Length: 102
Length: 464
Ligand SMILES: Cc1cc2nc3c(=O)[nH]c(=O)nc-3n(C[C@H](O)[C@H](O)[C@H](O)COP(=O)(O)OP(=O)(O)OC[C@H]3O[C@@H](n4cnc5c(N)ncnc54)[C@H](O)[C@@H]3O)c2cc1C
Ligand code: FES
Image (spheres, rainbow over the protein chains, first blue to last red):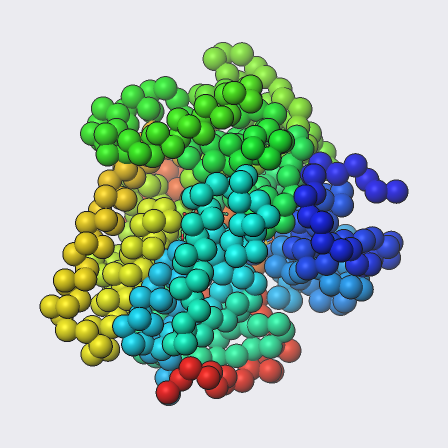
């Protein structure tokens, strides 16, 4: 079931299959990953290691690092990645801002 | 071992205008930008998006296509998706693209890395669902993703712009919680004498305000005591307006109280910066061509001081003239002849700024946040922590890092640096210049060992 998203999506690109925390999800191919996840109703992207506080995208321009997720084993900024078929996205609980790979 | 005559970092209006002017004057130019397509923040993705959403975004957006077209020049190598993480003397630029590292070199470099949203630390600003207004605009521009129930908080032309765009898109904001006061506007008109010069901008602003008012968006100017409520995501904004407490339910909050120069790359090169009191931010020290006190390093656009998209473009062309003259492609007479009309147009663009800066000053409650408010998002340091460091004798931001790790996360102080400087300056009774700013060292963006291992000296096709 798709959670009720706070966002409306005008994008009409064909969807491709990805997974988030092991669950299947369809996102528009080539879309900005952070935008596509927000539109799909994903609001919390990670929890901070210091206090466990939830975080989601803040700047959408690669500057704040709050959109960090794990993709195929690497920590990445979701707002700097485009959606492609088969992305495996994980939201680990204690993903520290210091753990970023690129 | 130069690969190009000039390396431009940033493909916004400043970078694009510099590159095409320099190429027209016979220079070989590389343009690096971490975004997948040219345009910068203001014209983000314009070539793809103008046809899809040009009506919502307006002519001020779609005109950017003229600049992106200028990049299609045989002397310009545009490298999109290239994140620059180091610039070393000489100048050797290291960047990552699609998981691989690469380096290029030139004797001259132009930084056109634009602006960042001014940090707006309010209680609750780290909650998911709270974003910058610029982020809201990026979602709309690049992705066609619209917030269904957003409160806009702060002040300034960009806040009205996104509100008007949301109205046009059929998803008007639930409220505009505005921080400027009536006396700010009166002061601006009286003291700057710029109300007249700012008139074209005022007209644009009034047109946007009319759109917002027609859509019956509630406005609360002069709001204070603003906090964002919620547990896992933003649920409401509470504030005081004309002595009465309000609480407005929403699912998204867009914050904005101005933009400030993104000085990371310039600082890493040792360019000196000075506090700009009128714009409440640091800006690099530059000559009339945009040349910094580090030989060969030019800066144009909002990274040089906030002037807006048109001024960025003009400053880019001016810098290109100087670079061409230094490289022997242009006599000083010819340089000056071409510069004259650009210079007066640039001065006209900047004339409205002092008025706008005074009419929409940063929100005092976010410049001096309450003790419990997180100011460093990466390391979760609070305003109270920084004030505590000052009591223990901490004088500057670099010392503060040692006390609390403030500014040591991957954002490298982009969203806490100005706050830390201001808090320490206020607590110690020192000026912003005396207090200083974080020392910025490469890598400017995190880089993996894998990317380092693939570092190759690229052999661009455009090099002679
Ligand atoms: C989020 C945001 C949205 C904005 N929207 C508008 C708007 O709609 N209308 C308006 O009039 N003004 C807007 N502004 C104000 C804006 O700063 C200027 O109007 C204009 O974009 C400035 O142009 P510029 O060329 O100086 O920089 P920008 O247009 O910001 O371009 C800078 C470019 O540098 C690139 N860059 C930065 N660092 C690196 C790096 N390390 N490696 C590689 N590339 C890098 C960025 O990806 C970016 O494309 C916005 C500002 C922000 C921050
Ligand atoms: S949302 Fe800020 S880096 Fe991605």
